[in-house]
Amino acid sequence: MSNWRIFSTRHSKSIFWLSLCALVLAVAALSLWTGSVALSPVQVLDVLIGKDTSSTAARIIIYSRLPRTCAALLAGAALAVSGVVIQTVLGNPLASPGVIGVNSGAGFAVALCCAVAPISQQYTPFIALCGALVAALVVTGLSWRTGASRITVVLAGVAVSALFGAGIDAVVTLKPEALDGVADFRVGGFTGVTMAGLAPAAGLILVSVAAVLSLARQMDILGLGSDTAKSLGLPVGAVRFILLFLAAVLAGAAVSFCGLIGFVGLIVPNTMRRLLGESSLSLTAASALAGAFFVTVCDVLARILFSPFELPVGIILAFAGAPFFLWLLLRQKGVRA
Image 1 (tube, rainbow, N blue to C red):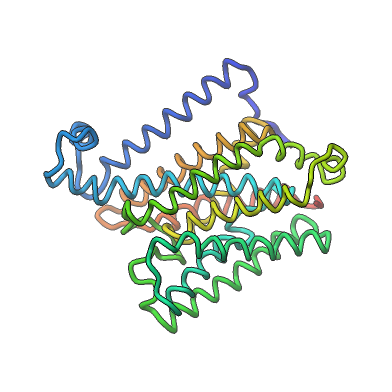
Image 2: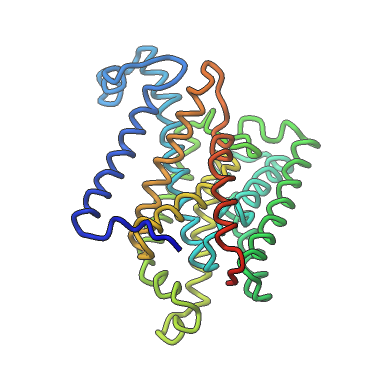
């Protein structure tokens, strides 16, 4: 396997982290002043520091672009970190929340609850969590019990994802008003996100990312293999369940406000792993930042490529992610878990 790990010295790593943080801040600023109504950096700054709170520009930023930018940053970080965790638990670089059906499980849970018993938006992250956890447990349970190959695990995930996706389509067909005002779960996007609706999911994402970072050492040991991890005294079953639960929380919280955005948890962790290596602490932190950057860039592109028309960000991500997944699939030919 070719190695892109160019950030191996202390100096180069410092440059990498500073550059990554700068890129996230830059794309967040770009997201705030880019859209159908052009705003200058000075206008954006005046609104952010509270100097302007009543102009048209202020209303655009406060009620539209700021929630959307925060949503893109949070969704990117959550899905990327969820991908890191799932790949560690399954020992499979092809695994991600979208590929193994976690996103679809979360989406189906929200769609079903909205159809059966309309719910307040503040509860959607917790309902999405339940659906994501069910999907994750089904796929991981199949992989552990059958000793399936890496490719077979992915195929099982595709089947689970298709099942939940059909469930979402059935709900939308039978009760089309069920998801009114909620993100388009089948495509994914940030249109209509509000700060009030984002707050519960944001809290879950921030706490879960911090929890994953605190478990980085256990993830490193788990990556050595089950037998080695047990010999080192790691309670493998408990750690796997906790990590899987956190991955489901992250994916479910993101899906609750952005819909079925795919491939972030596949592209970002694999790219960061090739740049930084296998250290879980660095990999998780870098994936969170890179995921936030990647999704926000795609959202900006979705707004400007066909302006004044706007594409759902999920379409941009699918165009980027599908070829990357096929490339990874070809690299894994003949490799078993």
